[in-house]
Length: 222
Length: 273
Image (cartoon, chains in turn green, yellow):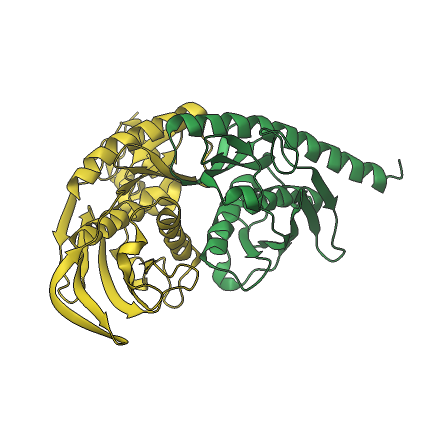
């Protein structure tokens, strides 16, 4: 049993709010327990000449942490999120435009990268940007005592031997992004991979319910 | 039908032009023949050349060249006050720079996102993987300690820069000699002699490019641009220290293939250091 009464292989309570911001083309808030990230998607919109691409949309990502103006870790997160967005968005449909994706961390209680990944998924769905698949992300960690934990909190991460972030494609079931740190064996990685793959399927089920709820609400069916 | 050879000659594209307008197809044509534009096989890496201690003013330095990619690493030691949270430790600050001279894609000015994210990946290795005990950098508990700045500068960017950056960094760390000092009455004085750092874990990285479901080992810049990149970090005992891939469609079998191949290459690379 973990400090917050969860089992080793369960994620924290998920929460979402689609269309959270009124002025963005698409926005969403996603929560894993107390970790919360807000994502706004704007575009296709005008692009600076310097960034203009003749055959596809330019995708710009900015990630703002809870405090301060951001460290190199936040730039790494930006790069990961930008690469995932570039892979999933059908950018050839909007050449010579820009799609801007902005993140704001609202509360940090661990697993912030995958919270942001999931917020981005919901915000892209909310914005109606053409996508070629959907994805979901989850973090796992191997504790110094050997336990494999899903969706760790800040307190648990302090005793991590290794931390693994995974993003899975919902259609093919393939892993589209991983970022692992710490020292670990092949077996530990395989265990994390299996666990994350299963967890992503249930997170994807949550996305479906969230989008369905929003559409029903818009159409007045409570 | 008779072929007008003169006409064919004038309309057919020469290789350079074809590469510029259809870079993906250009690479695909090579891979169909199980070879790559620079003549290597799909799972063949480039020749690596070392040059130990090229900078005499640094406490440790190295240059590493792999094909056309080249980096130089220099470690500078300074004296400072330790972090109040860790009074027994010194500092180690690794940094990777991709200046505008190394590739026309990079712009001059403050470090860009790619540079910062590569730097952060190296930083994470040193924070999370217990590479060496930073208490070796202490001089006087809570008063003075060493701060090591490890600057890795890419001179020529032709792909797989993380691999050679780590080789350069670790070979500079291995050749590093710190002067012996004494702390007397609030003053640091140099005494005769030098000491070396004990390195507990040596890490190497292997970069792959995933293109059309093929795994290209040690990709060049042109190959990196067309496919997605996977970097695997392995230490001297064959344990994994990190895996980064941000836009690859990888099945578990392909991923396992990469991990195994990286483990095999790591033993070869670490022998070089």
